[in-house]
Image (cartoon, rainbow, N blue to C red; front, side, top):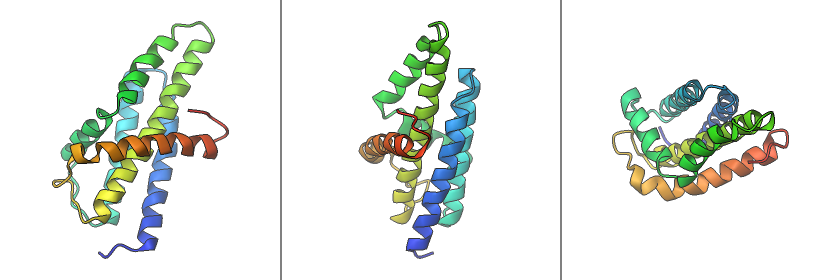
Length: 158
């Protein structure tokens, strides 16, 4: 399938929709369940993008690619370690920790989506994906994702 402007718009809509899902998934109070929900939503997003770009999909390959990308950002480990610590502060702690994880989850989904759109539009497949080469783009897209959340979703600041 030849890439078109319409196809790119559809891809961006897929990313936005899944970004909303992970914004909600990040609010799940138990970290393990929250992480599982976010990962599932991101896998579903890549599956949808794969179908749009007519790229063969492999769930196992997809899981490892997401892990490789997410592990690329130091902000991921910082946020992942900071949010649970915030939860021990009475009253504001749990809310702050959940919001932090929620915003980061949505920004990460935005970044993962942007990376895969770029990759698929350049003719890439899941098998040909090189996370190492995409890390810089992922990091920039993560920052853009935080800005997207700030301006698009009810004033939540990353």
